[in-house]
Image 1: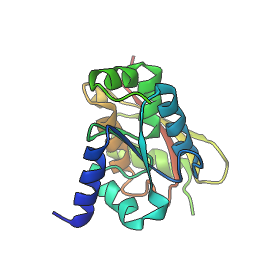
Image 2 (image 1 turned 45 degrees about the vertical axis):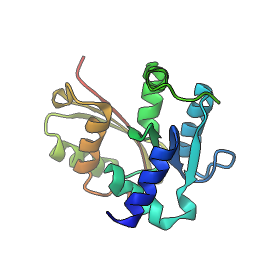
Image 3 (image 1 turned 180 degrees about the vertical axis):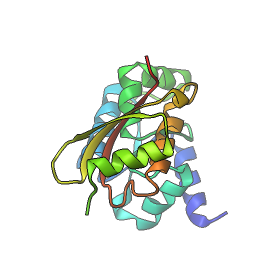
Image 4 (image 1 turned 60 degrees about the vertical axis):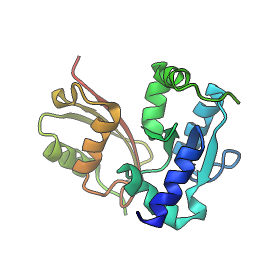
Length: 108
Length: 77
């Protein structure tokens, strides 16, 4: 298994909620990433962020890992959930709240 | 860099022949669009699967020449 895949495996399986994004939760560097952070803040869950702008290997590796071409990418309990648009649609439909409850994710 | 709205629409239609596609230019810079894609063939697919099909239709331009595409997929009412 390529080491980049192993590195990503470790990150997504080591945290309940992980957002691969551009920038950080405090200083998002892209509108889609900041919208994703805002949604996670609303959900009041503990989440880890990975700034892909600081790590080119992860920035490209994550797109192959999930077969998804864009950033941000949300993972809950090791599973790829979607990008910013899907997070928004799920949040508005209450599906993200349901997923968080079903997977028993740690609160912030 | 960037793409024309008509080009995006044509690519999506090529990949998803029965799709009804609405493209909105968000910034007028050829780089920031919103797209709404409605197709019967999405029925029964998850949002991730639906959106993957649109990205596949765009043939790897997503995240490359096309920087930002706010995407909504749906099945006909």
